[in-house]
Image 1 (cartoon, rainbow, N blue to C red):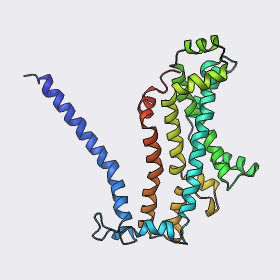
Image 2 (image 1 turned 90 degrees about the horizontal axis):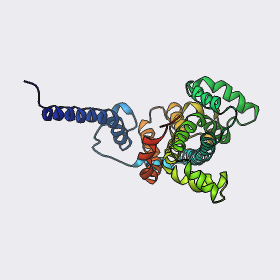
Image 3 (image 1 turned 180 degrees about the horizontal axis):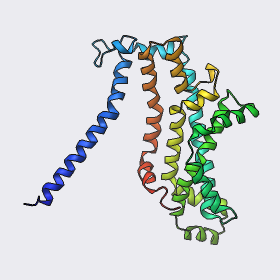
Image 4 (image 1 turned 120 degrees about the vertical axis):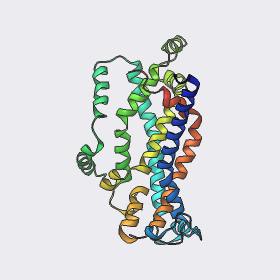
Length: 282
C-alpha cells in the first residue's frame, strides 16, 4: 500500500530536523569545547576537562592585565582594520556596482567578465605579487598595506553581488528623479543606497568579519608584533612563547566573536533580505 502523503511529509520533516541536529553538533561542539577550555584552570589542552570542576576567568583577566600580553593591541588593530574595511568596501563597491548597473560605456560587458574571471582564482595565487607590490610602495609590515589589499581584493565578488541587487531596483525611479532635476550623484545617494540597504548590510558584515578570520595574508604582510591582528597574534601566542598555553588561546579566540555578534545584531533586520536578493540578475 502506498505511503500516505501525510506520513511521507512527517518522515521528510524528521530527516530535516535530524540533519539540522547533526550540523548543529558538528558546528557547535568545537565552539563549546573552546568555551569550556577557556574557563579551565589548567593550561594544557590535553589535560583540560569538558566540564571543569573549578571554572575560572583568570585566563580572560590575564589577557587584559598582564604586561606580557599584547592582546588589547591586537584587538585594537583588528577592530581598526575591520571598521575601515567594512565602511570602505561598502562605499567603493556601491559606486562600482552603480556604474555597471546604470551606465552604458565601452568595456562594460568585458569588465563584468573580468570580475567574474578574477573570482575563479584563489587569493593564494597572488600572495607573492601582492607582497612585491607592497614592498615597492613601502607598505610592508603596515596596517595600511593590509587594508589596501583587503579593499582591493573584495571588489570583484562584492561588485557582482551589489550590481545584481541594483538591477532589481526599477529604472523608472531614476527617470522620475531626473525629471525632478536630480543628477546621477543625488540619485545614487537618495534613491539607490536607501533601497539597497539589505545587500550593503551583507557586504558590511562580511568585510567586517574578514580581518578577524584571515590568517594567511597578515602572516605574509605583517612582521612586527605591534602590528599583528588577532588571528596572527593568537597563533604566535601559542606557537612561540606560550606553546602549551591553549586555555589562554581559547579565551582570546572566544572574545573575537563579541564585535562580530554586535555588528550582526545591528544589521540583522537587513541581512535576510540582502542574502536572498543579491546576485539575482547579471
